[in-house]
Image (tube, rainbow, N blue to C red; front, side, top):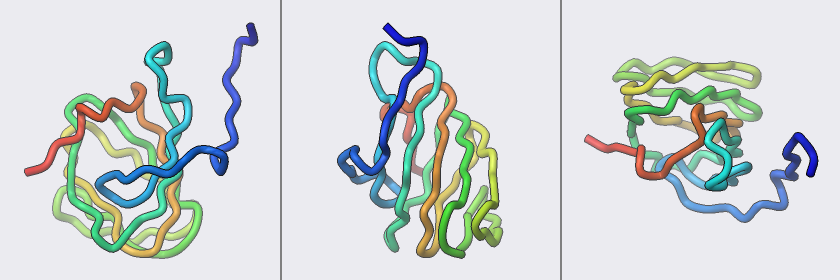
Length: 113
């Protein structure tokens, strides 16, 4: 068995998440380390937070904003953000974002006020 994982993000089915439509790679019970998400932000993105996850966002396409603990910051391609546990956040605008949750994404760690 190889000592690596490989996936093609555009082959993964999309699913709904608080910020829009996402494709989640490496999400399996035997991988607690990290996952990779490809997010297409939708207009109804909801502010949320995580109690244990740190998320690294890399803006791939589009311009818009991120709401981070009630502050609005502009983002554009190649903007990178590290969102720490407890930071209330949402993406605003027509954006495509690569997200790396660390540790691996757990849907039970999505919280809303």
